[in-house]
Image 1 (tube, rainbow, N blue to C red):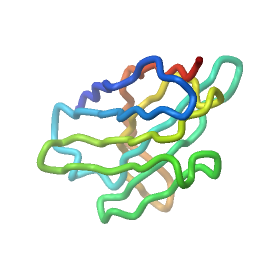
Image 2 (image 1 turned 90 degrees about the horizontal axis):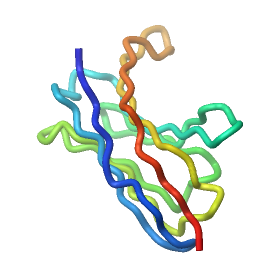
Image 3 (image 1 turned 90 degrees about the vertical axis):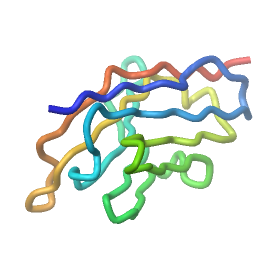
Image 4 (image 1 turned 135 degrees about the vertical axis):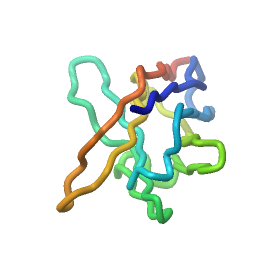
Length: 120
């Protein structure tokens, strides 16, 4: 079992930046992929960005060019650098790690979430 703890959320003005971190209690290297999701009030949870153990990344169209996901296997930590933030980025952000079997995520673990609020 692995526990994930997110940090780095907060209140920021439009156009500002935040860096989220997700620290795992165990090794994340054994997982095939890591990622960040968000769920705005009244909406479904949506993928923000993922990164595989090989370093391949994937982003939602809404954040491409503004957000960057990275992982530090030595520190068992996944990061999300968020630049040029917009009010529509406001949501709790959740970290996840998982295996991939037959092309589908499995053995998924979630963090408790960290709130990001973009407002003037």
